[in-house]
Image (cartoon, rainbow, N blue to C red; front, side, top):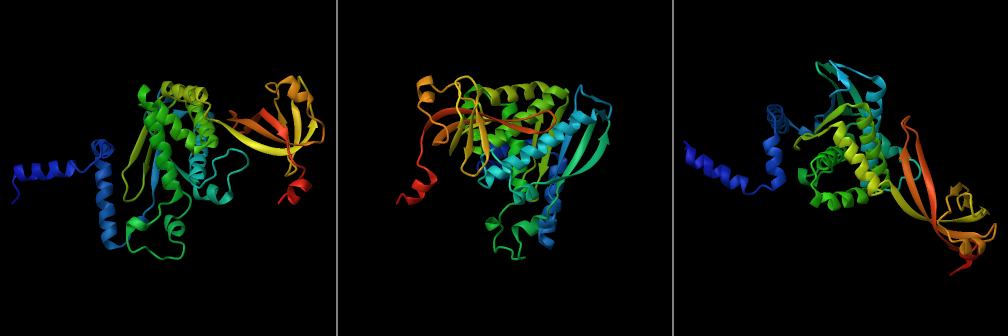
Length: 332
């Protein structure tokens, strides 16, 4: 029989193997988390715990919620912003970091969430689950790796975990950690910055606090809580660090040049772009000729409107002549 002293010694040795984050998550575990871990351990013995569905929850509460009623438009905006953030992070994880253009359909499908709504006194809870099947994504041919350590994780799980943890970090970040946080968001790209800014703004304007939970089989539960006050700070932080902006070099043909109006350029792919050229020196502007092919460094500011529509503003930073497409094709 194990004595109390021996048990404490074993627990001490075990705790020394854990990182600070592991200790925090263990401390934050709820009885439901321990129960889930037991169910998954049993499922693993009988077959494959990964066959169980991941699931999460968004709990809306605070001054913007009366009993278990809340504004449909406010809840809808926050829920839409949540899905956009998950898809944006998933796209960044798959290498699609630019906010220009649409997210590829395959990524949108892999990060799609389904809703199961439940009213709870004092709040409104949306239970969310992946639309796709985890095993179909990570084992499309039905071949299970010899070790679970070699197994990929579904994109929806990786993206959801990242969004929840980013929100948790942003609500308890100290001044010394803001640079690291800005770098992390910057690495994910402008689409993620714009999506999280839209989510934070939706929470702040609604007066509704958002609790989020994500549970993935055989992984720790992750949680975050964002109050309207914290959401305002997040929105301002992203704005001050310009985390919804990106620079891109484009080539195309000048169609209009102006000293006090936007320039119009037709890109090589046939799309048209209108650029704010107020930062271009007058001398440089006068050197340009209509219909010349140019290379431009453009700053793109992405935003998501309150109605969910997306918009982009383009600012010209630098312009220089470029070879014509014929000359470029002949260049060895």
